[in-house]
Length: 317
Image (cartoon, rainbow, N blue to C red; front, side, top):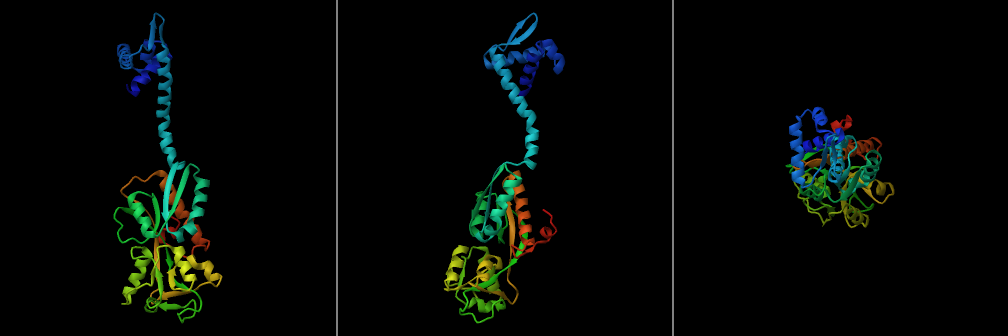
């Protein structure tokens, strides 16, 4: 059984005559009769009552008519459904990002998606950037906001923005430098430091900066949680390095003091990434574009203290 046979059968029933249907569909009457016989043989039932006035469907023929109409209507609607997925996408999109990024982007992105794409359900998952990249490679998330990766193979990566990194800690600690000034990386390495583990993006930035000044980084504590890094720094046990945005509230409250890191100011990039080896759904595509839009707005409004990459600054997506 194929779509053509269903279309011919409906034409016969609606015309009430094999000869009339043959003229409508442009098929010779003997060929049309043969299509009906093949259908009846395949289904094992009689589909048409034949008489001098024409044909009428049997009970089985009526059931086939109902199903055939539904199938043919679905096929007719299919192009619109496919094209409509671009402007009206549906489905779940799993997006991974670090805790510090999620604090800024997570809620605005979910709210924007709810308003603009009600057929999309966003599942937001948080982890350090290295874990998010692992999830992306394994297909456990569809889209990710990550820091630089040393191995971009199998990924489509777009640079979104660049942000400063700063040293911070409790006031009155071992660092003797006015807050807000630039501290040399050599002096930073000599402090009691809390950093993420060696596989994570922020740690790689710090390791590279320490290598440039010729002093190996030997952190006192390795913690793969931005929240716990801040909690330990709040206790005064050690210093840490994060972005100004991540500690803005605590600096404003006087809980932390912060310093820029030199001699060349320390910065890191943030990228939008998805797998280049798996299908990328229409829903994932529009959520990616929406994430870029939300990030541009956050930077423009001064909520995210960062510099947009060239294309993002120009507003292209």
